Amino acid sequence: MPSRKALRNVLRRAADDFAAERGLTAPLSLNQLRKYADELLIRTNQGPEHRDFLAILIHNATWRSTVAAIPYDKRLLLLPQCLKHSTACQGRLDDIGLVCSRCERCDIAELQNEAEKLGYAMLVAEGSPVVMSLIESGQIQAVVGVSCLSMLEKVFPYMEAGAVPGLAIPLLGEGCCDTKVDVAWTHEAILCSSESESARQDLQSLRDTVDSWFAPQALSDRLGAPTDRTEQISLDWLAGSGKRWRPFLAAGVYQAITADATDALPEGLIHACAAVECFHKASLIHDDIEDHDSTRYGRPTMHETHGVEIAINAGDLLIGEGYRLLAEADVSDSQRVRMMQIASAGHRTLCLGQGAELVWARDRKALSPEQVIEIFAQKTAPAFDVALQIGAICAGGDDELSQVLHDFSRALGIAYQIHDDIDDHLTADGAEGRHMCPNILDALSNDTGTAALQAASDLLEQYKTTAIEHLDSLTNSDLKALLRRMVGKIFCDFEIMSCCDDDPSRNAESRKTLGESAG
Image 1 (cartoon, helix red, strand yellow):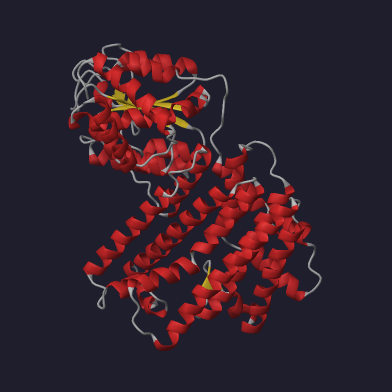
Image 2: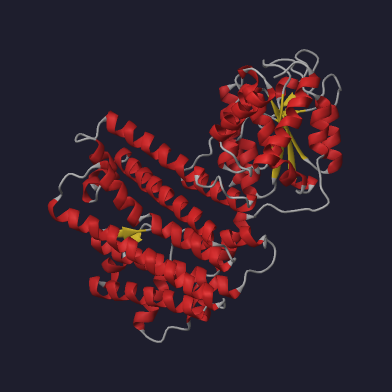
């Protein structure tokens, strides 16, 4: 952190200019920020000691306009407890953080008064648990946070994983006692605003909306009331348990591209989303038969309940219903054709991947890691790709965006399956059936020991990073944030963090309190 304010201001202007010239779009990963900071060090003739400070300035430059458009009452001011006066503070600690007494012996009271007048939520606490719970609840859409450089570095990956819009104000020095902050810079960040107000996508509200599309009556209204037992069995399976990830992603992409987060979603999109779920649920029926699985969502699979023949037929019917829904969707002819092409290509690729797995199951020959990864790419990636592409097509996305989504989905699908293999390896139930399908740990090592587990973990991080890097070229910050949040959600990249001097017992109690309030 530069000690001279004049230099801090010069570097901030340089970072703003750099971000504008390069057309940088948030969120950026820590590796990306450091790469850009290295470029800016050369441009500004600064030494490596200012690298992290420049990374923060670039981060702020990419998020400032987004934060400025978010209403004050949807923002959080997060201050560190180390700003308090170490001996004269009259505040008290509760399960969440410091409750300021407004004694004005430090800068906390002044900053808190300013923020609360505007409508901010206010916390004097460390780490990410409180912030992430508020973000996930939809109460908070942006964060203005003050912290030391070392703590910002620790917290950043979790904020980035959640694509949380934010402005970071580094403390003027390290240490956990009687620290200081540039009050003027903090005031400026707090007051940051623009004439236009925007709302961060409310993903929980969207999820609730998508779930409502698959209630039995809603499905009957859309698909037509079942006329015989075959249709009833298929409809029941479609309405049954599931996370609805794929229709949710299609709808989320549409919202992000059209900036249509408040109006009712169009019928053409809902038809397309229902088609995506039909394809997915059909694939589960067939996959369960081919893998000899007896349970799904904690309940008997369809073939266990109704027999293999009926299950195959019900899956086929759902595939037909999916294509019927796409054909009847209220979209342009060119959009309809493109959706059909995407769905059929995804269907074909998935079958090739499943076919490769079934052929392997006949002789169980050893596969190389590259062969296993290619099966993952064919089996798992299409489900993500079709959902994202169909949402983009409904929103009028172009070919360039289509390629980005395809590349992102491939890397994400591979990472997803590697993650699944690692989970199976670490659980007794999963270990028993681990050799039934091509497995990355088996490919990495004959004995699946510690080395193979570490290699698989490294490979997982590699493909997660690749997926995120494919988003670099996106200029739509809402879409980029949605997809980045998607990666964080799938791989549970949110952890509870503490400050360097937090009391572990009090931190544990905070976790309990937050868990109860979030629930």
